[in-house]
Amino acid sequence: MNKSFLSTLARRWHLALQVAPLLIPILGVKLFFHWMEWEFLSLNPLFTSLVAATTFLMGFLITGVIADYKESEKIPTEIASSIEVLYDESYIIDKNKNSQVSRAFHGFLLDFTSKLNNWFYRKEKTKNVLEHISAMNDYFAEFETLTQANFVTRMKQEQNNLRKLITRIHTIRETTFVQSAYTIVEALSFFLIMGMIFLKLEPFYESVFFVALVSLIVLYMIFLIKDLDNPFDYMSHDETATEVSLKPLHDLELRLKEKISEKRKLINHLHSYTYT
Image (cartoon, rainbow, N blue to C red; front, side, top):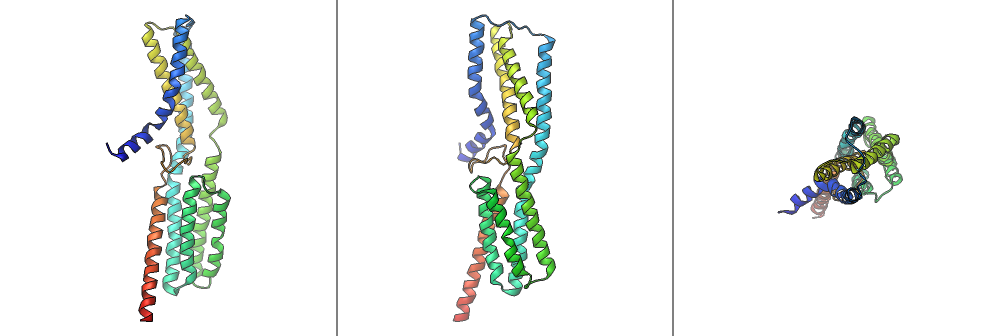
């Protein structure tokens, strides 16, 4: 059994592993109440209505957070695309003008991409990332004397796009979807689980089975909705299944390092050839 398979398995089942320990005290309380003969509720239409209401509200919540999640999935790719466009535009300037400023800008973009990857893991502040984006203006001012105005305009558009995307991610990370909806779902889930504990079903093993099953589904859905509500909640480089993949940005950082390294080797080779 290889390491990648175990890693995939852990990402896929990480929510279930978080929920499973919570079932132990729930089943313990159920066994205690059964032993004390405190099960006084009977299965009736009102109880099934409680189940239906909880299911409906969970469906409402997950529909809302899924819409934001699908939008968030595109953001790392858009950021990587904007940064690579900036690199390509400055590469053309370097190719035409052999400019030191454009080569310095390449290093700046690599440093920015590295900071950005750290920012996703909360190792950089949003303020620092936005300041880094604003610092591109110093390079653009130098580029105005080296190239046509429409080249700089395209770069400014990508800079603006980066600023909007970073601000959007920051907003998603710092806000939650309809707090009052979370409150009512958590309250209904609590009463549903308590109702299952007080519910008298015969034979008893069926009662235990349904308590465990309903509790697992309800708690899992609450954990899932909260996880999907913040798709940029990276706590380590081991991303879970509910976090948006940062692979486009990790791949971009590697590509920029390779391109800059190849460019430096070429320049060093040309210099050595000139001197000989």
